[in-house]
Image (cartoon, rainbow over all chains, first blue to last red):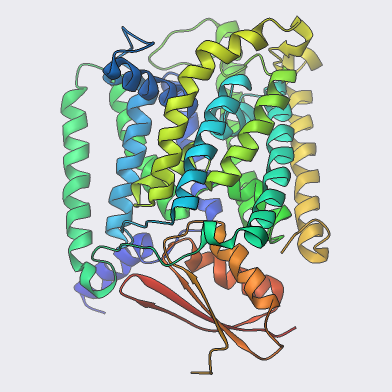
Length: 399
Length: 77
């Protein structure tokens, strides 16, 4: 094989076909541990709240003096997740505007709005609340996932009902495609140019701040990883109740195991790279008051939203980057509702008694890190056995 | 190419609709008949073969034409 052939083979390894989800989950968990070491772990909702506040500020209503996106590590990072995914889809010649019918577009908007409400009530989405929350050994994060699962089962029933009764809402055919297939030879070239511009621009822009540079560069990287591995927590939680397939849940479990391992080292040893923190403050990082009523209610609403929208906080962003217009609407719904819910709905939940909204850091409650880790390992083992058993028997799968 | 008995058009639709429509569509066919699925979601590239393997239906062919992914699936059971 010539040099050109070898280069082609290398390129195709990354951009020729989708990476397995477990590869994506592990890479994201390693990156997430690195983020935590730098400042704080990955999340989704904080960025939507910030972006949404900017929209309202632009319209001159409700919010003012909003933190600039360039001063918020997470708002900057997740914006770059969209652009990183855009680059990855170009490099893989998968970028196209995919426009579904109006029924699907409204489901995107409503699903996004529900996610905005659910994530603010539950103090966490699938990324900050779950992917990072489990890694942070949060008790509320377990409750949140119970809420997500109930919401998913509920929303799947709705989707089946809708397909039977109102098939036109989700009829296909209305798609506008731009330069994919053989006509798409320009895509990888544009992808390389945009990628280089993004990296250079952000490194120069944030040269005064190591933290912002890391969040920006890792945002681009996370966007690429998510798009290539089609990293989707909605899918991982939904699949046992839909097709019964186990690759997505098992992939997610691989990432969670790495995350728990990485975060525990940081918390246990009290390590922080650029942002000095007291050990107790570090231990309580990403532990939110969602044990248990807020986590359950918020998780349930979020679970419905992400199933109807077809993507969670991050699944929405990288799909938006590859041109899926339904997820653009989901992102808009999320941005518009998250700040409103935080300002007007969440205070109602904050008036609940203390037992309904505890911050539970499992090592504190159980007395040691070892017991907390054992609890998570047992949960993951049981979840694994369930998805594998269900894959064989199809007992809980609807299709 | 085998004769197509039914076409399910999922162009423009995103995950999970193509798989839900495929699962619904295949149930309306007789065993041995072929369903053509048209999709534009890149997620269908790993999802459709995985669904066929899981459900035991036969993926006869998967092609791409101008950004539209076409799958031909024979109902086996």
